[in-house]
Image (cartoon, rainbow, N blue to C red; front, side):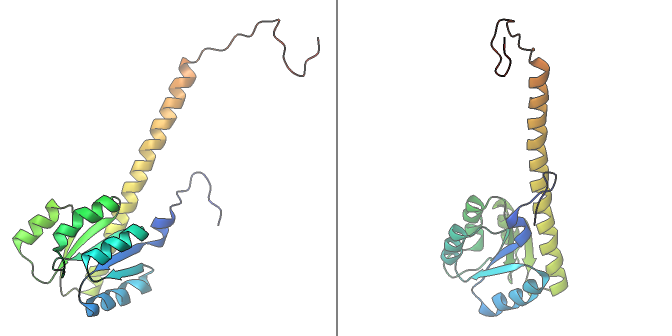
Length: 176
């Protein structure tokens, strides 16, 4: 497929990849069954250390992280994933919702907080909304960069005086 300069091509965004981190294989399989038919590329990890290894090897658009993992709390994993994948959306998943967990999740830069058990339709809606927010943020950032470059170019053109070439200068291709 050929892309024109006005189109925004980002293979990571196009692929819509999600890492799900949960120690329950049943949850991992259920989420895969919900997400894959919708076009998402789903990868799974059962521990935070496995998740971090996967983040080193691959880029993800989103990480869905259970709050209770065998080797750490999901809220402790959030900033590590944010450091490795700053553009990725991060969603906390919990079967034990508390105000403290919700506040800590927000403080650690979670983009959403989902309570188990999840309704598949509601789950897909949260995923789609967060994917769209990531896309919008990328477009805004790209537009700002393009705008800045264009303004600098125009400013340079305005401030540039025409170069004067002495009449005696040799111009290639012109015989005297």
